Length: 112
Image (cartoon, rainbow, N blue to C red; front, side, top):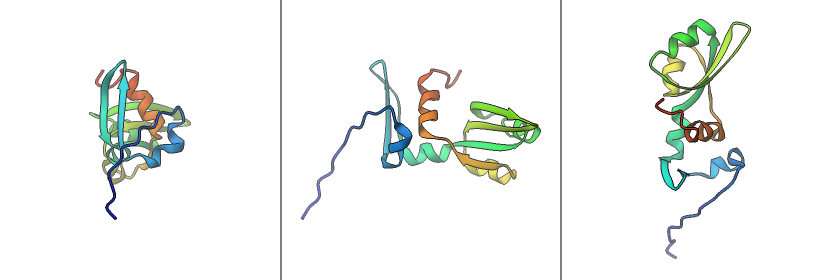
């Protein structure tokens, strides 16, 4: 039995709940494609980097910053960059929810 390729279009406001089902992410805004990327590439290139504020700030040089949070001398920065670079500097690295990444990409801040 030969399997046929299928494309399923899923439209939802609850992106994080279904994001692990994605193979490819296509974001349309006002009728234009603003992003078409393999979902795994997006997951690997967006990360939350946490550590002492001065270490995180030093890491952020020349990085595309999605957002930052600070508390008690610690900082978490959400960046569009390789997770491995932050890990090599001894910083804690976690994934960024796909929903947060999509909001960032659609708010027109990227490249600003």
